[in-house]
Image 1 (cartoon, helix red, strand yellow):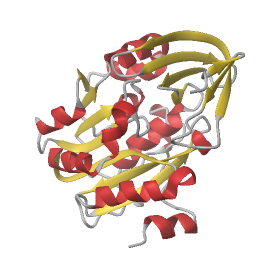
Image 2: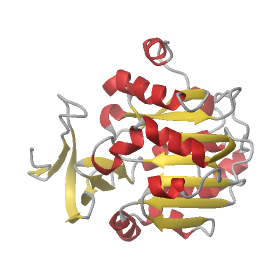
Image 3: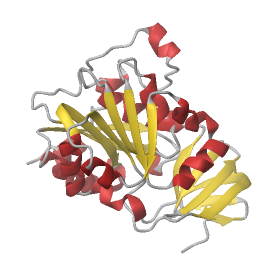
Image 4: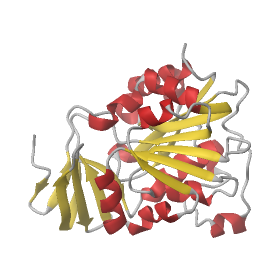
Length: 291
């Protein structure tokens, strides 16, 4: 494997996940490097994207653009549920999703399960604007296996958000059909799940495969997407499923006033961006929603 850091640049080169392309950031400092029990962790200061968290050679977030992903993976499912009182977050060790979910006025409890304690500890030290999510009194963090946790907490949650890395290493099992079955069993009636769903620019067939796995357990499934320049192709999607067969994800059940959007410090998500996120290019619709 090519050394990720050369001549003052970090390069994200993953031939299995996105062959034939790479993304590079000029570095100002390598802040921290270590191998945890589960993965390689790097904290990097960059010239143009702020501080960057890298797991197993893949960029997870940068302080320049993280809000796009964090807000969308949180508010798309939360505003599609009539009363998202109790929420489970699987993964999300940087704290960004917890930060966003805690902003929602209807959310009362947030239970988060992260397998790698070192990601949490390093995020608290080097990514405080994301890790501040753990400080909310709504949040209860458990270090452990999300699979085991959900098996022990059946029919408890209104919304389950899976903030995972790409489908390799410790996150690989979070993209399989059995995982959607486990989430279904952990939901209350009418519950909603939302997971990182990959980019249609990279592998539209894989996105469809993920959606098909979700459809085996959820009667309503959709794909939404957002732009985020530090991710491959500057793009990432979300697979969202509901136990409600009549759910229309394009119609948010909660709309925020301009004052509420300002108070919640939302930069990307809005009443207008919610339905727009589910609008897809024609060729993508033909692939993802074909029988």
